[in-house]
Image (cartoon, rainbow, N blue to C red; front, top):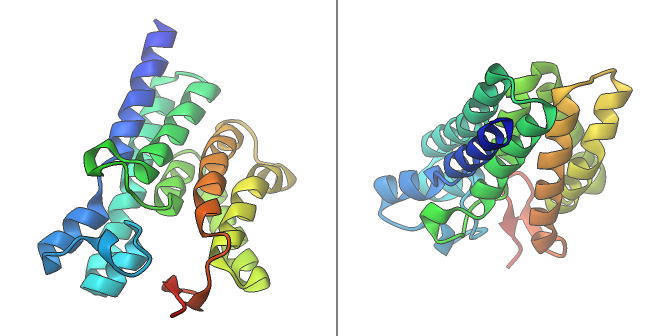
Length: 198
């Protein structure tokens, strides 16, 4: 039964992650596919670029929420540390490679943030601070995201965090790092809005 419960939450996490809010909101607002322009990723920042700040903020909130809910439920049911971690990892896998959007999704940061928030608000804040710090130091958001994904669990340990947050950070950090490797050599004109140089 624990295996079946864990498997069920992993599937639930993937399906929640697969909800392509950036695609839906941009299409409703502008009648276009968010993946056809800009960074060509289904992200909140690309939605901001194409459909405006309000649409982008809405997508950001929805992407965080879809990461938060399945992980929160998995934790409340008590399926164990690795069950919660796998659920979180599958949320981000779903966000990056969504079955509901032709397996062409976003980059996973907002969904990953939601999973962290579900198990530790402090961990969420530390993760955001780490990403911002690395972006400022490295001056390349994709590379900073890769490094953030790989460093998060160890930084959390340094801050004395233990339990579910470490498992979740390991799972989502690996997925985020892998996903951002596709933009490792990308040139940016505007770092915050993730716009490629012409």
